[in-house]
Image 1 (tube, rainbow, N blue to C red):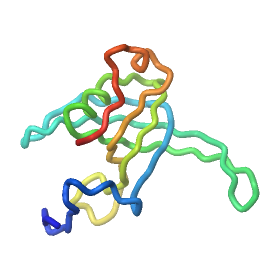
Image 2: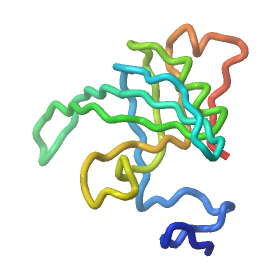
Image 3: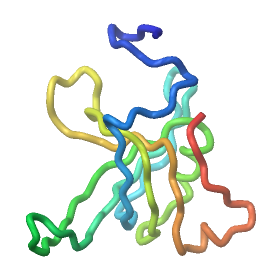
Image 4: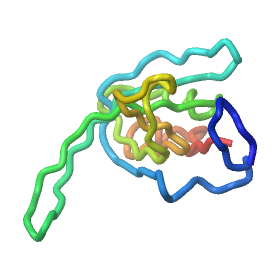
Length: 133
């Protein structure tokens, strides 16, 4: 395993850990413009609004949340940047703090895959579901 920022990191060839994996479907509420970090990494961000019916302890329950989604890398950031409020997406990734230096605070979904569902973007013949590399 390699080490970065004092954190043990799995080799790049490892599959994402099942210990921290989230798949969530919702509507895009807000989209931020794509930016590039000083290291040259493209970053796209959007806010995902989720609403569903769930069963908890045998009783129906309404589940609602809004979660910020961070899409790193050229392909994922490009997809995130092309989203519009109201687009329906499925985002898969892992949960982490919004800023690695914070000891607590806000959680974000770091996307490793974004599927655009039933929108004009998903009907684009050049559109492909993007995965991080």
